[in-house]
Amino acid sequence: MYNHLTRFFFAVLVCVLFNAQAFAVEEAVSDTASDSVKAELPIDQSGMIDLDSVDLDSVELDSTDYDLDELDSTERVETVYSRQKEKVKKYDNLFSVRVLANYNYIAFASSEYDGGTLESNRPIDFGLGLGVKDFSFDVKFSLPFVIDKTRRRSVGFDTGIDFFPKDLWMQAKYRRYSGLSTRARSSDDSTVTNNVTDFRQRDIYLSILWVKSGKEKFSVRAPYFLDRIQEGSAGSFIFGGKFQSTTAVDRAHVFEYYSKNRNIYSTWAHGGYSYTWVVQHNLFLNAWAMGGMAVGAVGNGAFGFFPDLNVKIAFGQWHWNWSWNAVVQATYSPSIYWGHVEQRYLSSFELLVVKRF
Image (tube, rainbow, N blue to C red; front, side, top):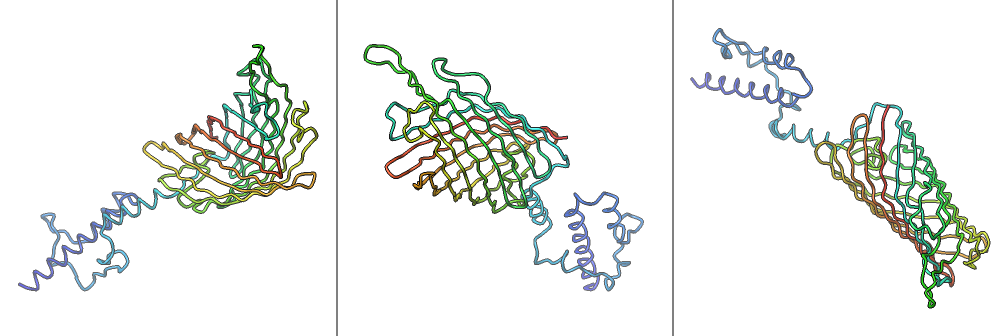
């Protein structure tokens, strides 16, 4: 009697373990394969397991798959599923076309000028881009619309290439803008005045950022370039640097400091954190905060310090053939020279649609 009970419980244990294995690999094997595993046990005419025909000495339990000290089948499935949710998925498409539209605002203030803050009069930029594997190329230019018809129209141009080798984000960028001016003000005799300025600035820089969790569970490309799908909520610290060359001049000679071309060369160190929340239907929300500090050399031999802070939020949705996002961002960059201080503020609302081929 004791031997029959032992055989019965042992056979039941074998059935449970076989069923647990079939359940854990349910997503990877077909029903036919599962039936073939169950068919290895002898079945009598009534459809029950024939316990007397089970050769217990021939049954071998795999220590890896059936170790009772390990997680049970439900926990294994949840663990595997959570690991899969952490992965960043690639698209199979080789090419992607990018369409961009930005609403911009730029402000510039100087300690040597008390006539007010210079502001851009260039609300909308339009751009096109092309993505090929780990490369992305964009070009943006301002459309001929203005907010204030009493002021000079701002002109902007922005282009660059982004490259993502392994856990790095490398960016080479060229941008320029002009036409910043002060808002019209009423003087004591009730006349409207508007200081004429022709401040122009041009930047060329190379940026290299390291994404700590890149290609594992977090992707900076997924929310901002839309060429990856991040399947689970995750974040990462981001560190890097930038080398920049800036040329600025005020052709109207309102700013004495920029009455001639001023060349500034700076080296930056950046650090920050970004996190992406992923919900159903591939909807996502990303928050980004990055701070930096630079030391720059001016063409006349002077030195300056340039801290900056960049904050942005991206919301959008990934699809297999196309994706979209909306990004709100703001950057504050003071420049501190010997006896001279400047402040720059840039903000934008950006829309991006990507179509893959």
